[in-house]
Image (cartoon, rainbow, N blue to C red; front, top):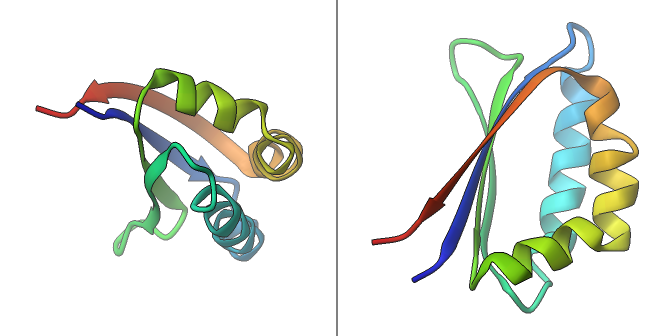
Length: 95
């Protein structure tokens, strides 16, 4: 069984391009983590300021390691979060 996090985000108006570039860089670095199975940022086709990131890890400890990583601190906590209007996280287990 894998541990899944789905993050729903709305980006501030005018910050869409910077947010996408940041998510792409974050995804590239995160996919190199040993506990990461999937890391997929997605943009809503009808609401261009709405994004999700689908994250799948071998276990919850792998997500904790991701959250503590230098690239997460620099790109997500340090940059992406400042571009957001809202963020909601939901946790799942695969079945």
